Amino acid sequence: MFCDKCEKELLEADGEIQGGKCLKFKDGDYEYFVIRCDECFAKDTSLSNYQKTEVFSRVVGYMRPVQQWHKGKQQEYKERKEFVIKNSD
Image (cartoon, rainbow, N blue to C red; front, side):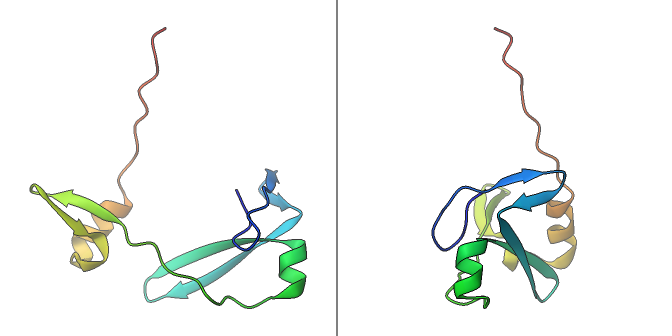
């Protein structure tokens, strides 16, 4: 994971971010997390100048922003699991 301001790499150990903080904010039904190193957090503790990432997914052949889906379809999207195919080499 990387600081959202200076892009310094931060490590995680035992569920804790080493040398940084995780800032959480809520927008409607969604919770967002921003990672910030201790140096950048000391300079600026506010969450400003951020832009939400718009996620697109395919529905019946059309690419659509997930945010425009109805609540039932959005919940289905949240419950999806990612499968990783292991290389047999």
